[in-house]
Length: 286
Image (cartoon, rainbow, N blue to C red):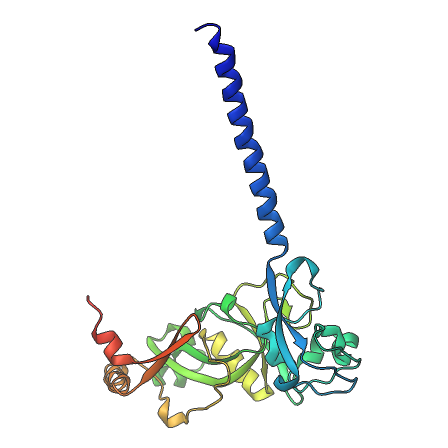
């Protein structure tokens, strides 16, 4: 047995060495696969000349290994931010479209991303969609919940604050608002830049709209509802009444009635199905 002990120890060391080498090789392979994992970015579908206005017809999406991506590459989800923009250099078919290809982006800062006739206003979103799920170029609806002064309080000069009242009101403030920035990150700031700023969203609004947002935020909380891409309809004010403790029961009944006639599209992989909302909810077991 003593003669066999060195052999057994040698075999154990050999087996351990095999496991160590195998683990090392697997790690190298994983690192290699990670380096070549693709990112879907925007490329030119055909040869483009300087001065061309970009459209979906002349652009395509292509997967590139992350390690080879240019920092100014444009992600698939940022396509809406560059449509109709003009490039200042020729781009060959299949080549990536870069943020630096736009003269305004190359020579200007964040102000170049603001649409003509509007301004940028930053709000803190504390309700609704998580800011991490929103991208520059997305459209949202803004909902505000704040307190209203009682009539007797408003009549007394300097008496009480707006927030001391129990008359809580929820109201849709703005619809179909364009998001310019999430935190400190904005389209064109550089590929892969980390976002910061928590729930801050910078929006493209008019001066009057900025007044509404500033006033509402000063007396309550703001929430955001992310719109589906391409959905631009705006509801009439009469169809979006303000909600109070007194009206919530009536509204619940109306909403439940609407759900019986509404359907939604559900995407699972490449398949899309349409299902009635009410039937979906009714089939759920408590």
